[in-house]
Image (tube, rainbow over all chains, first blue to last red; front, side):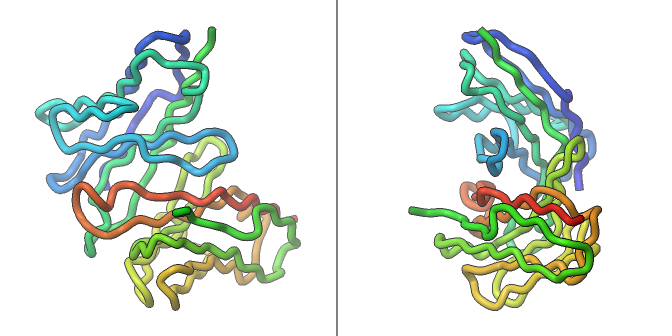
Length: 113
Length: 116
């Protein structure tokens, strides 16, 4: 399983764009990159997933370079409610084969006024 | 409403007293999983299940048991709890399959367990 490395914490002001990078040097060919958000005392919530290049949804963008050894979650114009822990997860989806999933320790994002 | 439920939400018990934490999902998902979360260690997978009667170990299975007799339920069993199993536990489910399904795990609200 690909091990992931993220910054432990980040600070931002409201309205700014936040980029959180995840390093996964030994990512496998079949691995996808998924990001989750977790608020205190709640279960994680899916944000976005991708395999290569760029993926965008209504919440965030995910940038993946050609070598796929890292990925960057981009949160546009953060607000106080984006204060949370963000997890990068690398692995195959549950397709019937390898389905052990490993979360990293996450990045604690603190947004202030 | 599509959801994953866990019971109990909070539990304080003593060393050695067997306990079960229940997990149920109403989305007809094949894949279910248990995680524990400890400060500084993030989320660690305990066990997972690909479908009924199919379970496998995650990263930290020692001291835990699971069963999957029905598709919707995936209980976590601690036969002889110890203080080092004091943690926040999450159950999750997802459908099987490649993109676009299979990546979005739905998590329960968590069970905070204290073993004294």
